[in-house]
Image 1: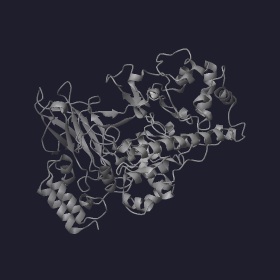
Image 2 (image 1 turned 30 degrees about the vertical axis):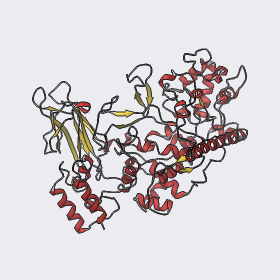
Image 3 (image 1 turned 45 degrees about the horizontal axis):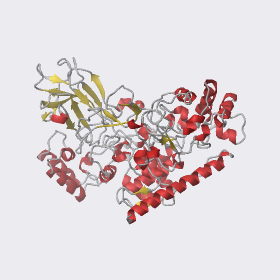
Image 4 (image 1 turned 90 degrees about the horizontal axis):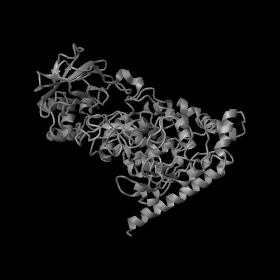
Length: 619
């Protein structure tokens, strides 16, 4: 065994020891009815500036290549810290609407390394859905390992250097660095941490959010620059994956739900629980041959023992769970035992989202002793579960209400959150379809948008799906609403050729929404026009694009030349621009240099850049 393997083995062993110590603390605290102190690794002490930075990053949708997905998209306090947006994943057979489907967390539409739309084998040009629903991040600070399969380990290894950054107790840090570079959850293909860091350098913090919490707004009033925010937290402006992970984990270690009626009851307030909830609690705690034996896995005060178990929900061949992480046959089909605090707020239950009501979970455990459809490696603890229907209803009342922290339900501090762009409350800012079909073609091509129409969004793009392979296509834009399913374009982007082969019928029009080219309050309408259709010219649906400015205010016109996002137009920006301008074979580079947004990179763009560069109006 080489030195690096010995070190990794030591980290895992130490992680197991920390887990055992946390379990011991939890057991000791049970009698007192209090959660133990939050474990904090010495390598990442909690500071206020780091906590606020982590909170900002947690809600930052601009960290994704679409600008519509953040950590907070999948972790919503009013849904118990889990994801309320669950959608269908077809499971390992790739066939929708049969027995192995899962209800899981949605992510982004598939895009290639240049951020051009590309057809996904399962989801086509629709939002990809992950293989599991996001677990709650509330009270996650107590878990030795995170994710349903525990692949976010206690020992945290720096993604960029490969060095162990936290020896043990760093599961939150380990978890934080997975989604931001996933081409299913948040990014286009090929995105790495260097690309994520560059994104943060050129955006204004939480520009897409509204109703920003007071503690965050106080900091943003001093700066919207991530470089400055990192300087405040760490002493210099360097943005790295390790620092991002440290900040995100620090914030999440403050998300502790410990003000439930049960906590008050354990502290001596006998009226904190209703009579029915007290009876449910008694059933929950009962042990022995006639007991419910819930605490075999769900140990107060966390109401989990943070172990991994196989309930026999589905055949192991569909998802071997923990075994994929450890390689151990004994871990096949095992998944993390979730904590039950705030469980009544969740939208789905179990690792595959099999149930969408808590009553269904009670029903499952009520019959678990008599029904054993998937016995392979099924946990023997289930043989002791005894939960008749009436008792199940009482336990459900206790879980749904007795373990509910009202701060989580009401999303008050520390569980408060801004309004994200991709939320129902922001409908007025979102791109919507206003004319479903054109008059030509029984299966018209589909227009695709997953991006905010915010002034300054250089990643705005519109896709086409379902055109004839190799057809000539063009995107038209108008300020006038459609008539009979069509717009009369006042402007066309350059002609394109729809994809062939694996990406047949797909096109992407990049459209940087640069200041001076679009303005807040503009309402634009866009539609794809496809030549070579069976009859005449085929068209897509029409989308309405309401242009708005972010919460940091409208960017200045000179921002189009501020390539590195530092608020200055200087030599560094010239180098960035020249490199992108010269690399015309790269679609994404073309977009960054297309300053007049006409779909071409040419002398007009160079003139715009040089004019801004010469005047230095951003300095």
